[in-house]
Length: 350
Image (cartoon, rainbow, N blue to C red; front, side):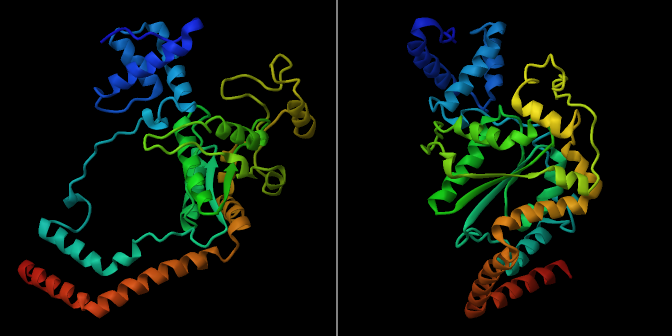
């Protein structure tokens, strides 16, 4: 493998073309996709860059993805450390002790398949909503409500997750093509940066407007997007007696309230300190009153969809069920399936 020339200096643009060509060629030899940082370690392991250049490669690849010079899905999405490839024998998952019993369950499921068909929930709606939360605890708390309203929800993985931004931006783009008003709901900490999250989210979406996907789809212009930070807000905190943390120490261990912090004298920091003091409320505090937290989520959704949204979605499901059931009745398919089930039951002695 030839040495990778990292773009720099006056010939950077020419070298960039060469860099992109080299890694795209190498990608054809790679079995599994890699993260941007994984590319750095991979190339260092092949001795085509030095250890000191790993960070440079990571930034170069991410910049290329943001600028549309590489597909945004050129890299694998950053994931947790959970295991993959785990297979659980069917016999351990329920009552299907044999392959024939398993076949019977699938055949029987045909009689209920209309319950699993997914309608276009947003057809005829005014808004299309997605939700981002700051903490995994909020995702677990809200996801059942979001499932009721068919709303995608994710934990923000930090502003470096280009892929995550690209994926929910693509869904917004598809929704806007169908004349839907797009809404991004956000819930996070009550702290100086958390209260500015709307501008952060917008700027981070603007940062990837020039991306391109492998299938040719281009980036999303978020200028018409509504970004609604629905919590945690001061009134909600006081009404529900949520716990304040008496410091403004960031995840990196730095104290925003310290005059030595570079952001301390900024207007947004001084305004926060004058209104709330040197304290914050972490989003996890909402777990102290789960029902109230769930209602907070539901209210944020129904602000746009209305309190009759579930009835509308239920009607869409009912129309699918009626169509399939009428077809089975007309074709006598139910009778044929029941006959097949009887044959299997006779063979199994049930």
